Image (tube, rainbow, N blue to C red; front, side, top):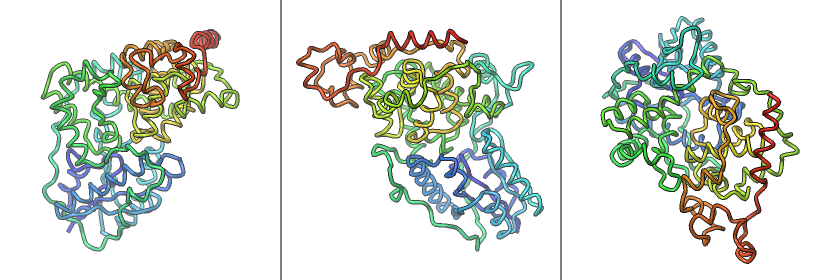
Length: 457
């Protein structure tokens, strides 16, 4: 009886899962394994919202496996040690897993290969599981990655994606493999009250509903802050509860401008993965050095605190930051404008903002979080690094009647229409009735400071 191990990482699903498919094809029995890695905790990446969502994903994955005669084996400890122990316990000759792109993922793979190799166990690493197109599969002449999105998108769009794999009907797991109890979302403290339910089942249900109602309108509505026309699928993509290949293929089947716009967003995710795969240091260092002399963190402490707490005096910024704290998620347009406000209007290092996002975002990951922050800050791949998103212009364009602001900033709930975006223009009597701060910065002064600092490049 041959046995293989499937190590789940950021691919917590049964549908369209190449490592599981390959393992089932190669062996009579398979051990589906997830390791609770203390290295993730030590690195500060297991924030409460992601830990709770992960618990949902693992419980859902286990339930799906049990319906097919299997189960999910949970182990707790260093990944190489635990995978090696499980392989020894069940007599596995192969371990299958998805390829990652971060420096941490590369180190994990190297240590796994070394640990398993000494026991004669082969490590099979599968590409295009976490992304639709594998990093490095599409490259420009003379470089190992694309640094600009548009030419990458053109080449990426020409790639032939594999057909999504069906979920297995049966998964036979050998007896006697020890496992730890599944984590419990209810036992995770500090979780945002509006955090969605995790897991492949919830993700597939959301995607099916959204393709009927949201996808056709996506091109026109995805920047509408109040209308919230985004898919909200990012947490499920982050944990691999949904396959990016399947999302692209099913969206293309529907067709139309909405599907095209959505597929473009999936491509942005792949774009960032191929950038970081080639330049892993960009998770903490500027991808393009701009010689920024960010304001000292101590000097900007009050402004940073106001930004984090949603008390900057700019309603659309504050609404977005409060949505983040309540839901563990933020509208994509809002992410852009609050990041621009911190890095260019307040002139604070992008790493401070990126860290705060990682503390709260359920979809926060090293790849997309760090690269998007750098894009906005002007140290990443943006071809217009000096662009500044004016929060008033953004608010009036994407929240024209103030519905989004009033939803998240109840102090301004009685301020009607567009006036809600500029409460400092209200009469003295009206302002005195509000428990809302004055702006932490004059926009013109913030812009002048940014331009002066960037003039030193």
